[in-house]
Each structure stands twice: as structure tokens, then as C-alpha cells.
Amino acid sequence: MKTRLAVLALLLCTLRANGTGVQPSDDQIDALTQIDTMPTRPQLDLAFGATGSLAALVAIARDASQGLDLQIRAIRALPQYCAMPSCSGEPHDSLTGIVNSYLAVLPGPLPPRDMLRLRAAIEALGATRTGLAGDVHLLAVSQLLRHPNRDVQVTTVHALRDVCSRGLCTRQTCTEDAAAVRALRSSTGETQLDAAINSALQDLAQCDQP
Image (cartoon, rainbow, N blue to C red; front, side, top):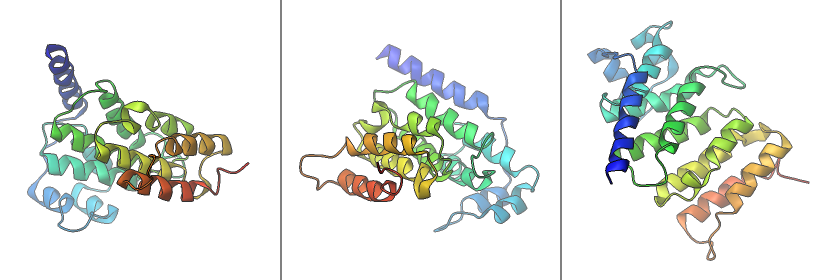
């Protein structure tokens, strides 16, 4: 238990250290935490400044001292700043960094706040739709796909589908992606996870062919 608490404390310190201590204004908080909708990039650029919005969102996303709702909104907004098609550099590096920081302390229980941050980062990484083998390999690990929390499993399956959606991955990467997802099927095929798996495999079928 002491070891687990020490590791979680280190994780929290790491997330805080990667932030820049940004203090969003009331207008910026309002823009980022709109009710019932995600803010668009033009709205965020208007609130944070077109040249500084990405850096501000990355700082908020990586700073665990920020309010949870604000931090999760920042994480989910990051894919809008991808330079397609590969989303190289930021925000991709921050999203993979957040996921990797949690993988370092899994398997094992996470506090509810960290569970939500992890799921948000996984979801956002999928939304970058990079088609990168590295992203598939990062997500297709037992710590996530076999996590005891079903929501983490479902979120990871959705992300694996999105990373390789619309033929973005090479044939080999797509085959590896589909195999990792397919291996999760239950004996009944009737769970929430099975529904996510079936949906993902339909989308991956276009590139997972001999």
C-alpha cells in the first residue's frame, strides 16, 4: 500500500511539473467549460489567443492542480490542434505522455479523479486519428484492455478504432489493432464491451483484410 501511494504521489508531482502553472481567466474558463457542447478551436483561440491557445491547453491538461472539469475539457480539446495527418509534436506528445504516466502505475487502483483523466487522455488520443503504429501499441496493452474498470476498457476499444479509422493505418498495424480488440470478446457477446468491440471491428474491417 505504501509503495502504491508513493507511486501515485510521484505521478501527481509529474503531472504538475509538466504544467506551467497557467491561471486561466474567468472568460477562458467559461470558453473551455461550455455546457452541453465542446468548445470549437475558433472559440478557444478567441479566448486564449490564436498563438498561445495550444500552449495554454497543454499546460492545463498536464497540471493536476487544475480543477478536474477544466483539465478534462482541456485534454479533450487538444485533438483540434493536430497538424494532420500524423499530429506530430504537440498536442500528440502531451496526450501520449499523460497515458504513459498512468501506465507506469498500472495495473492497480487509481483514484476516481485519475481514472477520469486517464479515460479523457485515451479518448483524446484516439480522436487524433494519427494512424500511427506507436499509438496502437501504446493503447493495445493489458493494463488498459484488461483493466478491471469496464469504462477504461470500452474507452480504449473506441480509441483503437479511431486511431485506425478510415484506412489511416498500414495493413499490418490495422491487423494488430483488430486482433487486440477481437481478443476481448466475451463468451456471451452481450456485454457493453462486446458492443464496443463489434462496432470497432466493423470500422477496422476495411483495412483488416488478407
